[in-house]
Length: 65
Image 1 (cartoon, rainbow, N blue to C red):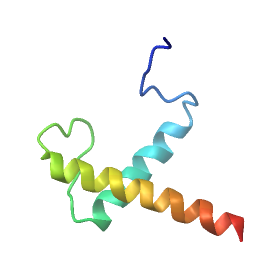
Image 2 (tube, helix red, strand yellow):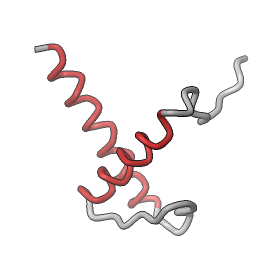
Image 3 (cartoon, rainbow, N blue to C red):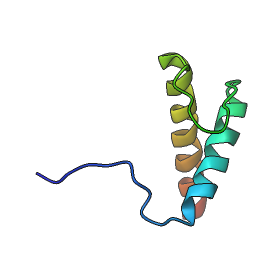
Image 4 (cartoon, rainbow, N blue to C red):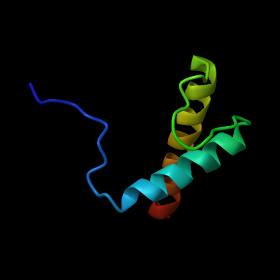
């Protein structure tokens, strides 16, 4: 079985992903801070992740047109 990790494969993408995460958090009203955000509730973290996925799907769908 392959080992799973959340490691970013392209180091240059790290800043872009952080910016993307911050934008998604702002859109759903969650205040993230730089660094550790372990004090977020599961609901808040799920809202941010869900918004990120929604934006990725919207971007992909618009690229198909």
